[in-house]
Amino acid sequence: MESRVTIRDVAARAGVSAGAVSLALNDRPGVSAGTRKRIVEAARELGWSPNLAARSLAQGHRVHTIGMALTRAAAGTVLDAVHMALIGGIESVLTERPCSLLLHVAPDLDAEIALYKQWWQSGKVNGSVLVGVTSDDPRIEPVHRLGMPVVAVAPPQLSGPFPAVWHDDAMAMAEAVRYLSILGHRRIAHVGGPVMLGQSIVRAEAFASTAAELRLEDARSVHTALSAHEGATATRSLLADAGRPTAIVYDNDLMAVAGLAVAGELGLRVPEDLSLVAWDDSDLCRITRPALSALSYDPFAFGAEVARCLLELLDDGRARSRVSDAPVLVPRGTTGPPART
Image (cartoon, rainbow, N blue to C red; front, side, top):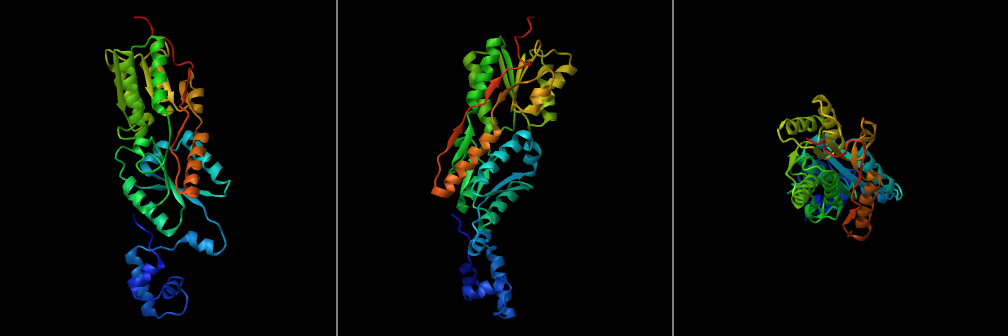
């Protein structure tokens, strides 16, 4: 486990006292120009940065800041109304302390890892929330080595050493597929997210296992980047096949709305010719015509649970992983029995 670089470490490298380091790095008189330069170079070599939390505590202020980072690509995909509600839920609990949420967008995963290191070694955050967890996530090992308290928004099989907070997406997917099967659908498709994304893995596996259990004629999962454009492209490809699906489950609302538009372009009636189910029951699902059937959950409450888990970890040094209620299927105007052929 990596430890924070301290003033004593800098002092040992520069061959001076800790007091001299404090004077030099706080730009106070009492050390020569040559000694100051040597101390600054030692601090730079060790990657030292001031511990902002310790400094605030010394001034009589209690600092609690929680970090949350997204890569630029992920931010462009997920910062919709549902995810903003999740962030709002996190903040609603943090403000009870009071605490604050530090949200940052990093260019890529390497930059995100470097950001966690800088946050922790400087004392800028007391802990972090890890989102967008993937299979063999490259962030988990280096962030764990830091010793920083972290909660992963991910199923426990992907959260590594961190406590996990997650939805029972497998149960929700099984409910959606069984519902469509009861309506009479035998050819059902799933338009999911990136193949390595944790929630996409869970949903695709549940889709495949439920389809096998129900002995569906044709059940396919297509992976996308969760954008409206890729949702539309995947829908066109699925509907171009001779044995096209009569029902599609989408991993978010944006792709489902795009799929509804594609069905209209192709002259298909919804739900008579094609039934659609969206994940994330947002305002988008309710304002389409017909309104989209959706798997619904409360992202604000989920965010609050994430924050409670992290505060438990900060208070007790450990926290239990917890599963939130499974999303519930809300049937609306885009699901019905398939047309007889």
